[in-house]
Image (cartoon, rainbow, N blue to C red; front, top):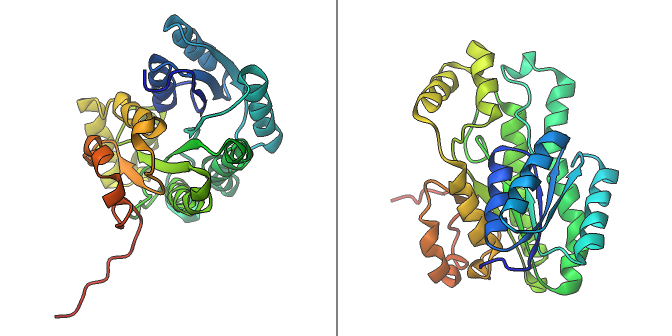
Length: 278
């Protein structure tokens, strides 16, 4: 098992990609602290994990609330004595439509959950990892992180910031043998897809058409992101850090044999490409 006896905190584990990652980690032998704002959903995730003969407990918490985040860390250390892996999967779509029509409070809340939540959880867990001189942090990116996404500005801005946060923190903790990476999970059919469809024309013509197509075709299976998360949480990815990797478009299965080479390039990073003059 790739994660035997590791301890992993997975936020947003009540459904969708977060649940898929928590279950994939459990199948690889990890102990799971499953975090969500919804008790019923997180209890179901834990039930499925225990059916895999792995240890887990559910914790209802809001990752954008510092006191809740501190309680997550306390619970993890009290129950398991350590934290090896943090997956920041909790996220919300936020307001859909032109920015001048967005509800200001909802826009700000989106940044608080997607970005500030990632910051708070990472900041809280790093002292434990630094003391033990090892750890893996995995952040979830999303649509708009690498290209404009009109009518979804709160989500796009927060996810782009998560990627740059990932790259920056990776450099800060490199000397402590802590790797920090981000996953682009692809177009997974989650509650966010239903929200896009419900928004109708406010989502924009291209986004709405893509959402309808995604619903018809089934979208990207959440297991694709979960498999990548297992790789990034395991020893196979040791040395790989500060990267944004697509679960769909990147041939990440080959990265394990190319980590040293990758780390000497700008591959899988946010960089401006300058066209050289002839």
